[in-house]
Image 1 (cartoon, rainbow, N blue to C red):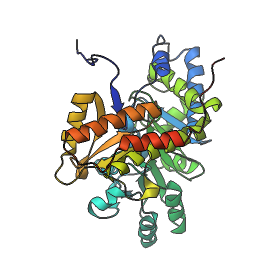
Image 2 (cartoon, one colour; image 1 turned 30 degrees about the vertical axis):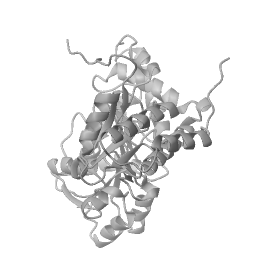
Image 3 (cartoon, helix red, strand yellow; image 1 turned 180 degrees about the horizontal axis):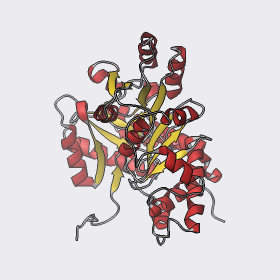
Length: 409
């Protein structure tokens, strides 16, 4: 038997930006007995989670739910809307944007990556004017889709998706807008319909507080129309069969039944008006992010994302001083304080680590995580300007939570 729960006392602090900790409520929901996925009870569950996810995406249009990771939903978004050789404009804000680009290339699409040069582009969100300029130059309208990442998990940059929509409209270009909100959904504000997105991609293991294994495509009427003439091969990912079966709460293949129990519970938690609903969820994440960033500034360390408006409510990237190996610092913190932090990826591996502040979290969770970081940084010999722990305590104490805890009856 593989031994995984090896922490001797207390709890392990999982502060990576996903997979995020799964609340007890969701774990209990997932433990219900598996039911017949063709039976009447399952149809009720299916309709419930489909309606709940429409509210989470803030859309009145269909949401496809796949038994897959976010990578599967990337592929589904592309193969349902595009044909072999179609030119696609990919904006690079970090490691996951570059991986989506690679996946698109392997599918036979003609990808073009734009963004700011070098690592500079990994310190800011999408610069929408660059998309507008490129689309205006495409006078023949050869580009069929624009792909951007809403919340870049590798850096902590949240991009203005409405600005991207306006850039496409200003260029008077018919390209589809495809958005990855895998780590943004249910943590950072996201409005699929209002922002004019054609396909939004997401996954279960971030703000939805579930284990990995569910992914999503929220779609627009324009995207569904494009799917009718798209020529890339698809079977498992095909929208037409899912759309038809979903009308009665079922799937054209075996769905991940017990994860859907958890998804139903997650929707209830996120949409609960007693806790502020979605707006309360977004406000909680903004507040946690400000507290964590106050700590990083007090330490005198750089935040990976230099553009204040793009700093994520989901995670914060902490840049190490020159000559300090961020992965060695992470290893020390893990071994000494039972705290997991996110590693740097791609171009910035070894230069920074990531603190997740999303999902099943609260002020004291983050104070513990920041304490582990501060002790570890000192043990690693990193010179700090001051106490980030004190700065975060001051911030949380002076900025009340947006929604008070529900009182016991």
